[in-house]
Image (cartoon, rainbow, N blue to C red):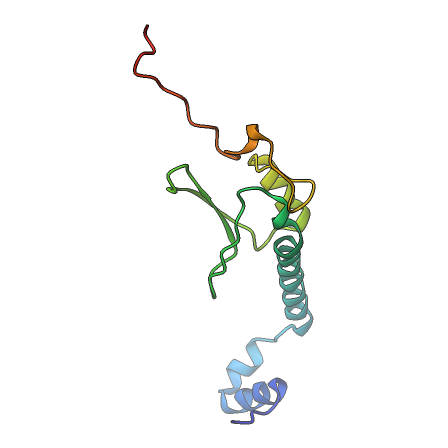
Length: 136
């Protein structure tokens, strides 16, 4: 295990090793970086809350964990063809819930509740029944 010095000390060492013009022309705004990191993590907490608490209420909405992949909703057609990819990383929990309901996913009252027959194909429309004798 390699022990590294703290980040401010590393930056100081890098500044001393760099030419004087590079160290004097750019000033790092630590407060701005701290705010960006906090905002990004808070958004990810919102998505994580949706995944851990809300997703179980939606019928036909499945979470597939892919390490290192961006957080996105992938809409599939009836034949499992990809229709659309919607990034979720910058959305709040409420925005994701609103989006999923707008996409016509059925929200159950309880995770193990039965789904009414008219929503079995949701969010897709049920297949159209065709008959060979439709013209008779």
